Length: 375
Image 1 (cartoon, helix red, strand yellow):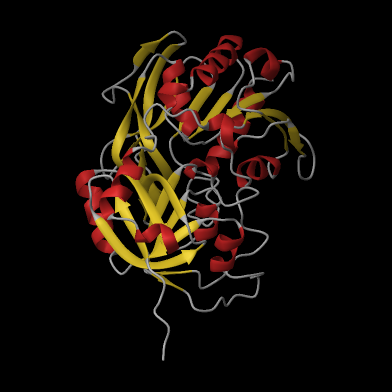
Image 2 (cartoon, one colour; image 1 turned 90 degrees about the vertical axis):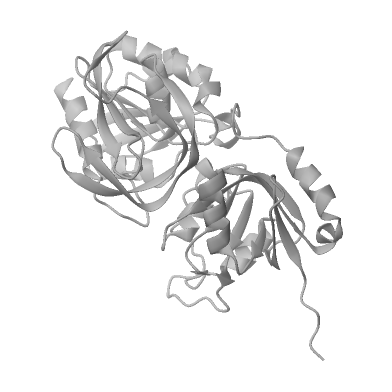
């Protein structure tokens, strides 16, 4: 006689419920639920610090077939609060695999669920927007649904959350240049992915990675040729310390480059506002257009907030004129900013793009050109 399979339940804050089976650790977890449209790169997604306090649902139907390995993680551990898939791979088959995805989730205590309705879940989130949710399995799944909804509603939302300091490095460290050193970069870790300093190191940058709480004085004490602000989790409206630090950098006129959360911090430093997107951009297939050249890059994204900036021409800031450099062709939101009178720019997407696509990697070359021009 076959044993009765364990049950798990996914509960959304609006009362929508999806039933399935446990995947990964058994227990309970809560967080903001979002969906990722990438067909590849699940290990990079899981280890991206920008996903802190988020439950990630994958739209690709089959997850885990290449297992996990030691080369692809973007940080030292799985960062997501929970994981939702349609069909977990029964075996891991890849020459680089050192284990299965299910085992890695269990070992790191990440509660997940496999449900047949990931398409319905994605459509629901597109219609209603990202929201709080909980995954409950084992004994936790036996509670009445009303009680589970109450647990979800008692959890914190993403708006107003200052999370960068929770995931960033506690101590500074250095990523040495590969080949020969050309530049010194001070990189503020707001939730940095390991591939980002590697991309700069490939271009001869010695990267000094600093904690999220680094001040302008601490950044400039390195006498850097350029300053970088990384991606990261949370609400940019709550990151006042990072905004103050960046304003000090801009006052000093040091070349600046920001990615994702760094783009939002740059926007705030210029006096712009930010807002929460309905369901965000998460995946490896977002079309972004350079408004100056008309060129379109297919790009990797992971963000639930965006900068509110005028797209109809240059605008004034405390640091001179600025303009929106890139826009998303799906929804028109701001995907990049640049100052016209100082060496500073940022993008909302991920040019380091571990797992791909690699259309935008030239932005690191542009940063190096700014640093060389400032010598």
